[in-house]
Image: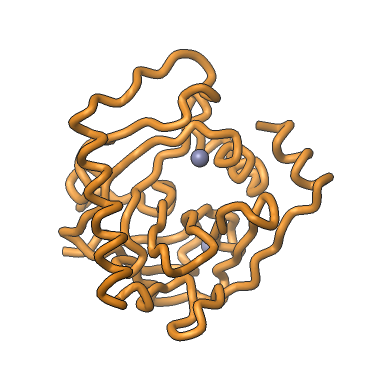
Length: 198
Ligand SMILES: [Zn+2]
Ligand SMILES: [Zn+2]
């Protein structure tokens, strides 16, 4: 069974193929916090320490089945990660590198809420915490065995690239690698506003 993906209002829908290589992580970096503030979803996306729960996987395992026109893209700077969200209801969807030849996506768990299968059923426990220095309060760091599990994803990313199947990426045009929604880079003033909220 695949794991369902959808925005809050149900316009954008899709699924993540499983079993896959996906692993769960929590990122405490300032940029992920700023993204939640940009969407005005900090209350539902961030945990009490400012962490964003992520399912890290290979982009070709993600499929959209409806509402693709609602998918929008922003970036905190002109070189930053592309941050994807459903513009209908400001649900964060995921983060990708700018170059589709690195076919990685960090899906934000708020678009993967499901009772059956649960996040735990599909992707197991949270394996890794990253950028804990910008967490509010102390967060226990990741055991080495879990880091090894996360490295498995990078191996899949590299294998996907070598096999050429990186071109199957729902966030980018197949041959061109052009993002399916034009990225909006925040201006310096806009970036300062969302960063200071974080
Ligand atoms: Zn929506
Ligand atoms: Zn982050």
